[in-house]
Image (cartoon, rainbow, N blue to C red; front, side, top):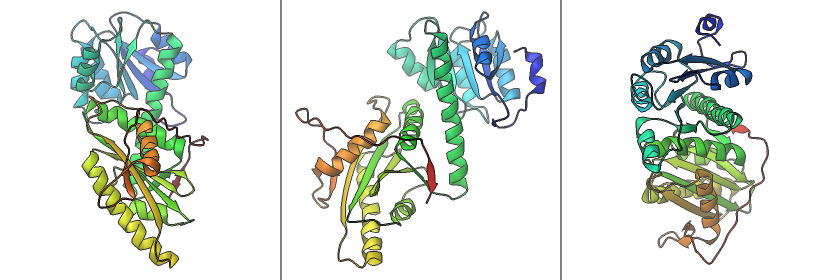
Length: 320
C-alpha cells in the first residue's frame, strides 16, 4: 500500500469495517508489506526512524514493526521514543525485525525498551504474519477489557478466554519485571449462583476473573507476590464463607483455595496459563497454610506429576 492511499483510511479505533494499520520501518524494501496487505492489513512502509516517529504520531497505527538497524537510529531507540507517545505506549504492539536470531541479552534490552517481541527475518513469512495477528488480537482484547472495567462491569472469562487474557498480561508484566499471582476458589456442595459476584466484589479492577468449572473460580492478580496472594485468598475466602453461609442457611461451606505466584516474570518466566493450573492443583494437593489449612500453596514435587485438564471451547465472557 502506498502512503498516499492512507487518505481513504479511517484513523479512529480499529473496527470490523477497517483494516488494521501496520507501520513498518525498514532499511530496504521487504516482502513483509505485501504479505500483510494480502492478509487484509493496511501497511505503511518507511525507510528511516524519523519518518516512523512522524507517521506513528500522525496515524496512531495498530502495530509497529521496526528494523533493528535503521539508518538514522536503532529500532530500540525508536521504541523508547514511542513508549512516551499518548495513544501508543504500552497499548500498541511494537515488534523488532532482526536479521539474526536475538540473544537472551538482546531480548532483555528489547523488553526494557518497550518492545513486545522480535520478528526474525529468516522465519517463514506466514509465521511472521500469524505472530503479528496474535498481538493485534491481544491489543483488541485489552481494549475491550478496559472498556468493560471502565463501565463497572465485572467480567468472568471461561478457561480459553482466561488463558488468553493471562498471556496478554504476562507479556506486559514480563517487560515491566512485574509479579503475578493466581488464586483458585473451589466450592463443594453447590451450586452457589452468586459466587462470581462475591469474588468480583473483593478483587481489584486490575484483577482478571474466570471460571474453571461449575464451582471453581480463578483470580489472576497482576503485581501480586506470594504474600499478597495469600492476603487476597484470605479476604475473598472470608467473604465467600460469610455470604454463602448466610444465603444458603448452612452452618458452613466446604471451600478449598489454592494459590501460586511469581515475584518477577522477567527473571522467572512461566506461562501465565500454567500459573492458573498450578493454583488449581494447589487447591487439591498443595501445602496448607498454618492459620488457614484450607488455603494451600502450590509446591512443585519432582516425584509427583499432576496434570490439570480443562474443557476447551470458544472463548466467551459473561457479565457477573
